[in-house]
Each structure stands twice: as C-alpha cells, then as structure tokens.
Image (tube, rainbow over all chains, first blue to last red; front, top):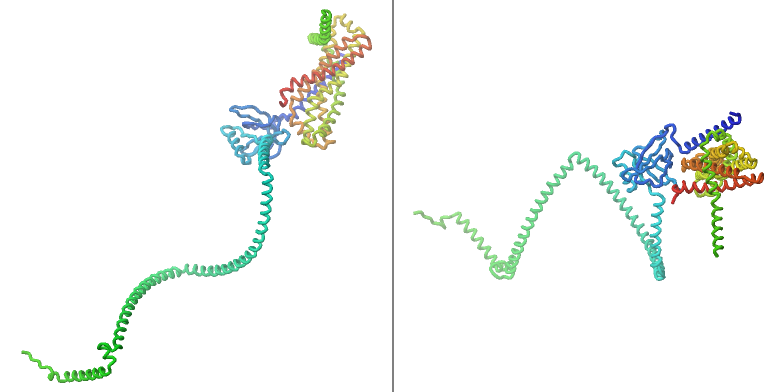
Length: 337
Length: 266
C-alpha cells in the first residue's frame, strides 16, 4: 500500500470516526440521554395530556427537575406518561402531575407537586381522584390551557356584545331624556339630603353628647352595682344573703297575712261603717224627733218641768229603796204555810 | 391536410422523446452504476482516495460556510422575532434551521461546485484524452473503476461534512447569541433542547447522503459524455454544477414532502 493511499485511509478514517462520534455525542447530550443512571422514572396517568410532548420539562416547585420521556396510550382510555427525573431531586409527598402550558408559545410542562397544593378547582380535583383510584401510578391532569381560556373569554365577549346591542336598542332618545331628568332629580334630591344630613348631624352631635353623659352615669351606677355586687358576693359567702332571702320570704308571707287581715279588717270596718251610718241615721231621726218635742223623749228632753219631776221622782224612789232595805218587814209580809 | 397532421404528430413525438431521452439515459446510467457496485475489487482500493479528496478536503469549506451561517441565523432570529418570543427561541431556530435545512443544502450547493465540477472535469479530461477508451480496451470497466468509487465516496463523505457543518453552525450560533445578543448559555441551550429530536439530525444526514450521490452521479455522467476537447470539459463541468444544484433543491423538496408531511401541523 502506497504512502498516499495509507494517508488517505488514515485521513478518511479519522474524519469519519471523529465526526460520527461528535454527532452521536452531541445528539445524546441535546437529548439529555441518561448515560450514567442519573435519572429515575415516575409514571403518571391522565385522561388527556393536552399539548405535552416528548422532551418537555418536568418542574418541581418551579425548578426544572427532569423531562417527559415517553407518552403512550394506556388501557381504559388512559394516557401514560413516563417522566425522567434527576435522581438527586426529592419528589413531593403524595405527588400528582399537573400538565399545563408554560408559556403562550406552545411550550408545555409537567409540574410535580403534592396533592395538598393542587388548586381548589372541583373539576381538576375530581380528575386527579379518578386517576388515582385503583392504580399505583401517579395521578395526572391537565390544567385549562390558553385555548380553553380564550374560548371562555370569547363566549364572554360574545355575551357582552349581545348585552351591549340590547342596551343600545333600549337606550334611545326618550330613554336618554328620561335619564337626564332622573339625573337632574337625583342631583336635587342629593342636595336636599345633604342639607338634611347636615341638620341631623348637629342633632346627632347633641344626642351623642347626651348619650355620653348617660353612659357616664351608667358607668357610675355600674361601678356602684359592682361594689354592691362585691358586697353581696361577700355576703353570699357568709350566708347572709341566704338569710336575708329567707327573712324576706318570711316577711313576705307575714305581709301577705297582714294584708289579708287588713282586708278583713277593712271589710269589717266597712260593715261597721255601714251600721254606724244606719245608727247615726236612726239617731239623727231620734234626735230630730227629740228636738222637734215630739214624742216622749222629745218632750222629756225639751221640757224642764218633766226633768224636774223626773228628778224628784228618782229621789223619792231612792229614798224608798233605802227604806225598804232598812225596814223590809214594813213593806213585805211573807208566810210560809 | 394529412401531411400537416402527420407533421404535428411527429413534432409532438419528437418533443416528448427529447424530453424523456435524458431521463432514460440517466436512469440507464444509474442502473449500470448499481450493477458495477458488485465489482468490489475494482472500486474498493480507490474509495479512500476519493473519500479524502471529496470529503476530508471539503471539510474546511463546509466549516467555513457553517460558521457564518450560524452567526447570521442567530442575528436573523433575534431580529425577526426577538420582541415577540422569549430569547431562548433563538437557540431553537438556530438548531432547527441548521440541522434540517441550511447545513445540508448550503454545504451540498458548495460541494456541488467543488465536487461536481472536480469529477466532471477529471472524467471529461479522461474522456477527451481517450483514457477511458484505453481502460475499456484493457477490459477495465469504467463504471466500477471510475464512477462507483466517486459516487460511494461522495455519498459517504457528504454526511460527514454536513455533520461537521451542523456542529459548527450551532456552535457559532451559540457564540453569536452569547456575544452579540446577550443571550446566556442556559437560555440558548434551553432553546436548543426544548424542541430537539434525533430525527432532525437523521433527516439532515440522509438528505446530505442523497445530495452526495446525486452530485457525484451527475458529475460522472457529465464527465463521461464530454465531447469537444477543452471547451467540452469546461461545458461539462459547468453543466454538472448547474444540474447538481437543481437536483439538490429537487431532492430537498422530495425529502421534505416524504418525511416531513406527517410530522407537520395540519
């Protein structure tokens, strides 16, 4: 083999091998191939993966921790994702995988987070629960992407446009005039209200001053009540209050009895008064008759001669009685058989 | 009347034959090359020599082209979409365009001028000086001795040169982003990795292999059909370069339709 041929062989061989090696190494490096066993794998399943593609980043707490290694259709309408994570990264406790667009330019990412940190979205949580049920794989779900959000925004803007159209139809010249009138009336009303508020605010100031005075009085009373309560409380501790209560009960019972007696007395007095009234009325008639010299008593009372005769009669009777007592035999003769 | 119809039909036939005759001749040429591959004892000793001439000695030009292509791509990407997309998309654009298109096509066009003209001129000179006739007289098959090693060497070394161009292109794009665009290495790398697949590299290399084979075949065909002395050699070389450039673009479209159709958004 000639020198030039050997040189040619060497040059070609070197070029081919070195450039091929460089290409392979570069491709593996850009693909982030796991050559030293520095990755571990996490398998997740979801009903839909949205726009996630092979090689998309896997993020834990905002830091890139791996990439999506494979996406495949599974059984029962599931999609299985295999995530390659850096072995040195700690996976959150009770992990779930959320798939969402990382930017507006079609770039998606898979976020691994704890189940507790999942947003409070009912649909999302239901999807995660469904993915977790009856499976050893990590649950995954898709967050609404910009397309869905824009679709919702589109619907909202459509509704707003309809409402605006209807408002435009309803709000014609007449409505505008009425609105102006309403605004004018409202301005006037607000002026009146302001004046009223101004006046009433002064009254409120006075009332508040009175309330403050009243509150001060109440505070004093409360202080006194507190003092009284403390005394009552100390009295309670010595049983005095109980004694007072008992005495009060006894006094109340006696008062009730006294009241009853008083009522009876009052009733009797009423009857007595009635009788007295009758007696007085009779006496009055008797006195009237007596004063009118009618009848025996009237004659007796108003006739002095009768009094004198009666007086002398009474003297004589007294003398007779004493004589009888002195000399009974003179007047009484009694025989037995 | 009959004569006019006859003449018209004759003209149509002549045009059709004229149009398809080169296709037929070319197809027969390719079939004879494929047939000559079986004679390994004839072309194997010459393979490394042609691989060095056509491939190793073409590395500098491939590197040179890729170096400036990468710089221009990075600046172009930043200028075009710099305010709309995040900065790391510069890396994505550089990687995608270099590996999928610019490295194979630009390198192929440059090598079409170098390799195609070289082959056409060499074989054309051999034809006009009757060296090929002498080979045939000595029962050496010109196909297996002259054409097959060149075609195989070109088909083998074009991917090597293009692969080197891909590496240099991305490297120069990275350097330009770092120094001229203030895009950090992690950002550039993120953009390169985020949409990178090994298919990009495979696509570019397979395409470049087809370019290499086509350039060599066209150059050999042009050289072997040279007539008219030195002028004929010049014409052959020029024709080889032009047809090679056109064929590179046709093949580029062919591979894009064949391989990229199912991978695009519809």
